[in-house]
Amino acid sequence: MIELNSVNKSFGDLQVLKGIDLSVAKGEVLSVIGASGSGKSTMLYCINALEQIQGGSISVDGLDVHAKSTDINKLRQNIGMVFQQWNSFPHLTVLDNVALAPKIVLRKSADEARSIAEKQLQHVGLGDKLDTYPTRMSGGQQQRLAIARALAMEPGYMLFDEVTSALDPELVGEVLDTLRLLREDGMTMIVVTHEINFARDVSDRIAFFHQGVIEELAPAKELVNNPQRQRTQQFLSKVL
Amino acid sequence: MSESANAIQFFTGFRFSDLGFLAEAAGNTLLISVISISIGSVLGCLFGWALHVSVLARYLLGSVLDIFRSVPLIIQLLLFFNFFPILGLPLEPFAAGCIVLIFYTSALVAQVARGGIEAVPDSMRRASRSLGMSYLQDMRYVVWPIGARAMLPAWTGVALGVLKDSALVSVLGYLELLRASQILITRTQEPFIILAIVGAFYFALSYPIGKLSARLEQRWQYD
Image (cartoon, rainbow over all chains, first blue to last red; front, top):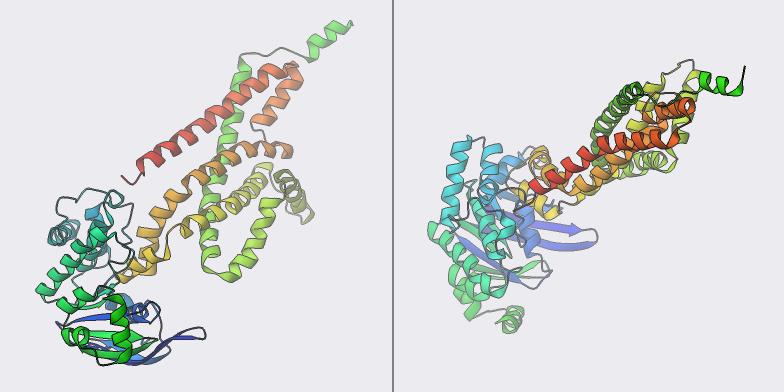
């Protein structure tokens, strides 16, 4: 379970998260929507300790993310993250991109790491690209590679930060399909996205962020079809 | 004694055995260059990393490195070589030349290395850290291989430059190619042929570096 209690986060004088309370249960898919700059991505970075927080607490499986005693590298092995920019390692083949972290972080043997990587790449539909270099692939393929790379660590949770925002429109579908696949696998996910229809169809709940607070949090279909708050209605009327 | 007899006594033409003398000097040029470039490059990478991570280093170390980059090498060599005897620690020309060239190389490589590290986008480093890699693992497996590729062409330029600049160590009396050529020119009075031969030696030393670098660059292509 991921739990956020009154989380505050500021960049200098700018407070981006204002007392966020949220919990995501094992197996749940939560989508986070809202305008740019509303703090949704920052929240993901805080959950993965890629950003520090100024108040409140975040715990993952009961482990305090920002406690000094927490082994942050160990914690991150349990929380996969995929970014807006896919960030494939350009000097490694597709297979090695995925096998690297199992090899050096989980200390798997080369053979084990290879078979983990093959399995994950096959899962996201890149089984025929093992020896290709990522720069030869489309954005959609590279984003699926990034997903396979995160999955290879066998994390308990996956965080997705606007993973389709940098893609050409015709490539969005293949990445969303991969996310659907993970949902079927029962993966616990927090998905920050601008794809409202996808969020409605795939997630259990949706959180609508507005200027650093959770303005509305409701079951997915309910929030999209029948938003209660005026700001949610305004936002949805603009993007749908 | 006639004037021509005098000339025969003091000046003799270029002989085949002089090639051996030049080859030995070329060996010295190679030796001082290899030592300076290799140690200077390692040091430069460490300095480059320091410049990248620390604001304090950027001011303090950066200023010191700027001195090495800005003051003509020949002045550095003469100052350094003549400064130590004042302290009662006379240095051999070779040692003095090595030390100055090492710091000179490191000053040039530091900026190249910093550029290499900064060629790796922050977002990529966040991605590797999000996989559970430690800072050092990220540096070793992601930043170094990508950064090294980015800095290779500039580093090659530095290495070739230092190889040729090592000629300046001749002012300290170290017998490398340029100094050897001056000795031979004085004796033979045949500057044209000797400088041409010395130029060919420098070319023979430089060419493999450029070739090796081009080959690495090709092998390190991302596809």
